[in-house]
Amino acid sequence: MSKSFPLLALFLIFSVLLSGCASQSPQIKANMQTLTAEQRSAQLLKNKVWRIKGKIAFIQKVKENKGKDKRQSASINWEINETEQTQTLNLTSFLGINVLNLESNKNKHLIKVNGKEYRGTNLPLLIYSLTGLTLPTKALNYWLKGLPYNSNDEIKIDEKTQLPISISSYFHHSLWQINSSNYRSFHGIDMATKFTIKKDGLLIKIAVNSWSFSD
Image 1 (cartoon, rainbow, N blue to C red):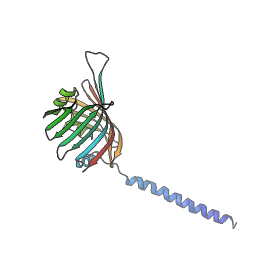
Image 2 (tube, rainbow, N blue to C red):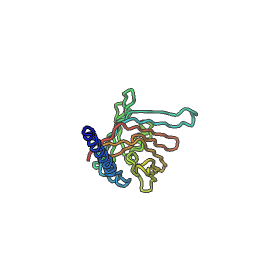
Image 3 (cartoon, rainbow, N blue to C red):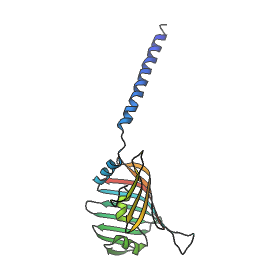
């Protein structure tokens, strides 16, 4: 009997420790609260400077060429300062060829292509005329963060995660459908890293490797 008592006491102490850990687990989880969609939007609106790096692909259906879509892809490095209204955007092909180099200061845009410089104030038109690419940069500034570009945009929120999963938005008199997925945490903010952006016969796919923010 004298030998069994220490074992019994040790067992009781171990049981108490286990029960204590089990009772603390729900409390820890309870303190980890998911941000509401409104709280997340408010947090993102405070971050005026942000940057993404990743890949982008343009897939355009061509009516004259049945079954063969026009495809272009590139690496994307995009930085925006919303306070100063400046941005830099670089698109580079997988062969290392510069597709587009954009610098914007308010409503003045400079694009460098093939060693030549082009300037204008209508950025979507300027990009399209030089590269043949349809890139709604002004609206993407909002869409990629899961924020509405227009006040009447329709945003679908996942009930469980409270994260945006789709946006229906009008830009330049056309309806765009944006789907967001594969959320990851960057600097404490959950951001989508996979996007499909559709308009008519155009599909833009974006895969983000990294998001960075600075106040």
